[in-house]
Figure: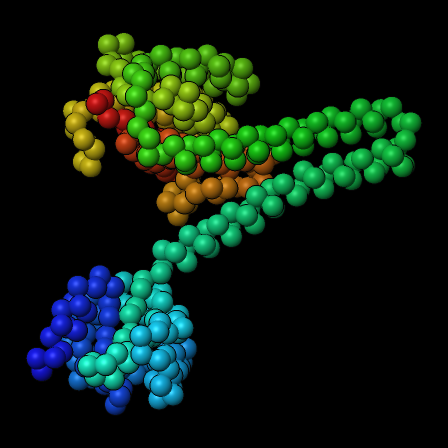
Length: 360
Ligand SMILES: Nc1ncnc2c1ncn2[C@@H]1O[C@H](COP(=O)(O)OP(=O)(O)OP(=O)(O)O)[C@@H](O)[C@H]1O
Ligand SMILES: [Mg+2]
């Protein structure tokens, strides 16, 4: 490297994103460590187009040279950004990169093009999730609204004055309105829980009391399900830093799920235990296991269960008034408590949901 390139090289090396300097013959003059790692090659001396091969970023590079040839941008003025999207396939998957091309015309530097590559995979994934979320919410809202609009029309037209039909239809309309109310309140709850996820809870909570209160509130559902509940308490369990209402919400959903989806078994088991250490969690934890003996869940569904709106059997969940948001809310609350939610299940034998929460 010649002496006048040394400052350029130091700058490039200090950049966190992969960066290349490309000379007029389209060969790579310089590459920083991040770029060498990205392409797993020494790069210097190679043709830039053998690494930036896709049509869109290759064209961006040529546009950069065209600008340079036309004396653009005039020295001292910022160039209009030239950007392109590039997909880099690695043995571990795909990385989506934003390629930015900047002609360098400053006096004293060799004519060259600075190419920087930024990994935007996570940004694109987040955008995709947001689009999916909006589509899911719209879809979930549309079906009760369609039912309501249909029955309103029937009540105003063909069924006008028919008291028996009116009563039946009003019952259905009430159920659909309740479903929408639940959906909206779950969505609000999810957004609140998400926005608070980084704020650590400060109050001390007794999990034993939380579980007993939740079970008392769920007594009617327990009776309807006809299941027996075996609660193995830990009376001298220490309190943990927690948000009581949110923890009630977690165990309410997990026990309600066990009652709803585990109804083919004859009981559910709930236990509270102290465990001195669990890999990945700091210090001793309190572990709550909620076990049902129902149909269980196929292994392929387990990693996706805590995604918003993910249901194993959408039809069955909706028929039971579920929104598919319960476990997503649970996951955020458990994260806020620096704890862990894990799920074990065997098809035909039942499921166990385990919540582990640090004691301090
Ligand atoms: N104990 C369980 N046994 C079998 N499947 C379960 C169990 N718990 C949850 N699931 C499956 O996971 C899905 C997601 O559960 P989640 O609690 O998030 O939503 P939901 O119960 O359908 O709706 P909501 O919680 O809003 O009432 C359920 O629809 C069901 O298919
Ligand atoms: Mg649920």
